[in-house]
Length: 395
Image (cartoon, rainbow, N blue to C red; front, side):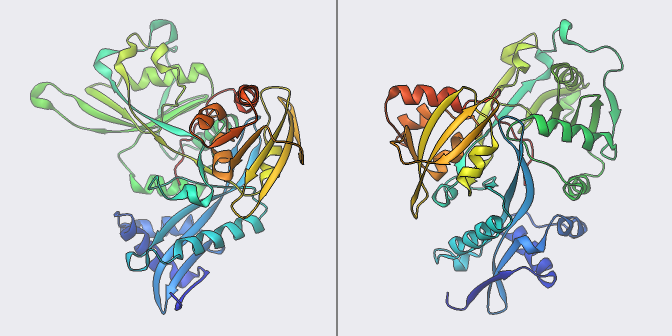
């Protein structure tokens, strides 16, 4: 390990980084996508580990904005491309890479680091907590339709394509109003388009859009094509209903599957004529948060009740105690010395930060120590958001 050094990535590293990432995650990058992948990378935010002249580790972050309760967009470092060569595992290299990334994120005054994890058992020890979840769903299109009172007027949804400039504007409006969502860059959108240049169907509403792919299954004269829903972006309930009406009207389709499009608190089952046709087939972690600057992150969001709450946060190398004077209009957050209402580690604070996980549930799991049961009751209401956090955007 003494020969392994970590440095800022350089242009000459890019091809090796792309090859290393593809091998590490079991999905080699096709040659035609290399330029699109390169366009998403800010080399100053990436680190490479080299043993002699051999690349043995990569880690980076994207400059992103996270929508938090109250609607603020908080500058955040989206940690990504984390991989270590199997020959260099269990030698502390991942911890070194993460330490360098966190120091870089701190230097950019980004109070939150976040990631989506390829494995669920790695990142809690680095201070990350699961703040939002994905609802994996399956719908039998042949069994259900949107109820008549929710169907749109003819012409409310139009066919379009990924080149439509309205899509980026719609998504930007959507993500600013949806807690847990992050921004999308033109480079990211270009990469998505290049991956499937001809197979993605797109429809748009004035306040939303949907994208999907269809795999043909003719089934000996009984077609049951498989529709994979990618995005369903809806700013209003009317757009949500109109887009689902369109998705559920695609001919020849049997099963519809969704990995990210249905929020945990999605109203779809209540606007179709057979709730049971909408099945949740899995719930998995999505966005993991690590509050780098605890005070700044707590100030950035609003709170659902007028309340004073003192929290003690174990940072691993010390602790901080904060008093939050919060309300739906904002918060004053200051260092405190008084007895805490809640005590937890940094990962647990990340889990409750967006309002998607109740403090009382984590207390039952032994991850939060509460002053008393009343403190937990107040904390549940205090940290809760208007809706559960939801993130459609992987990175």
